[in-house]
Length: 291
Image 1 (cartoon, rainbow, N blue to C red):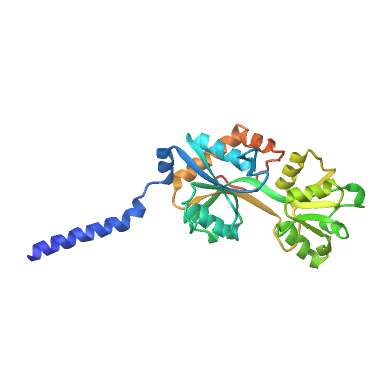
Image 2: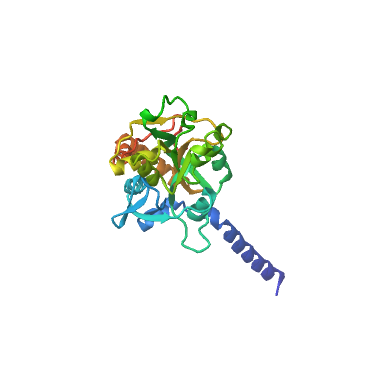
């Protein structure tokens, strides 16, 4: 083989290799794929009322309705992907957004109800976490007649307080104020059971994220005589932003979702979705557009 032919062969091989390695960079934005197939796949948590849960043979909830509204704004149909929470939310992002579960099934275009703690956002750089649509805060419902006053969480000392087991509220009662609230915790499997215990008078108060408290009260038709929402102090963060996540490197999809959520805020549909489940839609006071 002549030198010229060898170099031609080498050049062809080099070109093929360059194209192969450049392929990811040349890949189109996921928004193009979504529009081509006419479908937005959205991952939501299973058994997470009032945000996403099964009722009457179908999935309903705030996040389900929000997923539908976002799909409509993008001009495509919705493909809902309910999933069980993994060991931690980092695993959820990996399995649902940027890599996929080891058992298969691929990833979703979008995941809803993602906590946007700054450190969490920073360490999950393979996903884009953005688009705050709710400010969640731990709250307490209680019966005034059983409390002389309620001016701090320390007022819960000596009272039975229902909490969801292994939740932020459970950890709070166990560790805040040097453990002075530890004996107050009455652990239930979920917030719904905690509310049932409160309605029956078995506990004096319930501590849980406000949205879950409001949703559970709404579904039972009960009203809370007193509802305290505050930035509790202690070992654990009790207020956080809730947003969305997509795979990193899809700026067009991110921009489209930012625009879609902004439109839902402007026309009042976001607030209507929350109200349909008995919730108050609260924006983060410092949330920036698209973050």
